[in-house]
Length: 444
Image (cartoon, rainbow, N blue to C red; front, side):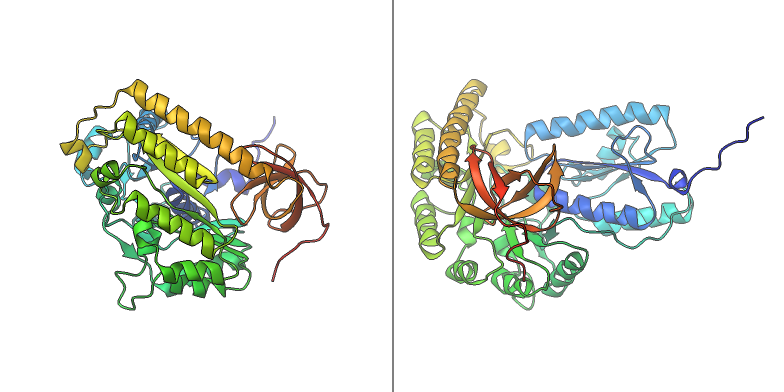
């Protein structure tokens, strides 16, 4: 008779599956949640089917994102019926103020907790580990960090743009102290991170709620001095809050990347006013020109919404003209979708037809594809510094200081290293190249 095999240590570990969609803030918070789970002995799975715990980090900024969340919750209801011992936890912007309503509509979910409230999840997880719900966890130290990591520095938003659900789901602005942020960056650097992106729904509002009144510029200067960190990014910036002190810091601090995400949203003043953006097209144009003059080689990304309530063909034409004039490196464009609870949903009819929205979105995407192709093609034959993040499909993948995606082939080990790459070809979306120097460049 054969004997039963002795279970391995890995097979006895509780398991989890983490599903994440949405912005970089969601990604950063998912990384923190994963650290909590890893730290008490959970093992991450690539599929939810066999997981002891399924954790959803959700987004509802766009209608299609909310549809994906509801679809995933429906799928998990069926899965949990087959595996009653599985736990389900949900966070992110899908979790608003009506927790009781959510619990009634989705009774198969064990825990709803608001976006960013990692401490609530940690307390719930600690209780489950202590009571043996998923087996006895094993206390582990934090593992290696990714070469490029996200660090939330301010949560919530005070702007209340008329189309945006974020302030209603994430609340008012709350800044972490500079000491907390620097400690987090130091921890990541000690575990191998070379680049950090400081995150906030409106990152340039950082510090306004702190007694010290330390602002983003002050914080950038502190993070700039953390040993091991070679690059610093930040997002997202609101054009209204970008001042001269900040622009000077971007130009002066050597580890701050010369790249900024500066959402314009529309190129027509009437539409911007209806969106409650707080600036005019001319003010935005002057800001871009001032930043480019002060920071040579600056790369710019922007966001645009098409089909906002009341947007006419003439209004849309002015948006196209502005994008053509300013020639951004990247443009993220989305069709307006009604978000219940926002000012626009309450007071503005969604009067732009879906086919008009689709055509306008396609027109901007096609124009931006041409602009991005031209800008990227100008780098062919030049050498760029690339922080290598991973190997994918036989090629090394990383980004330049201006946030250009680069792929190259090489037999060496480049994960987490700075490579000097000669660009050999370009597309609108990425660069291809070859290693120009066999040794790492640029590290301090």
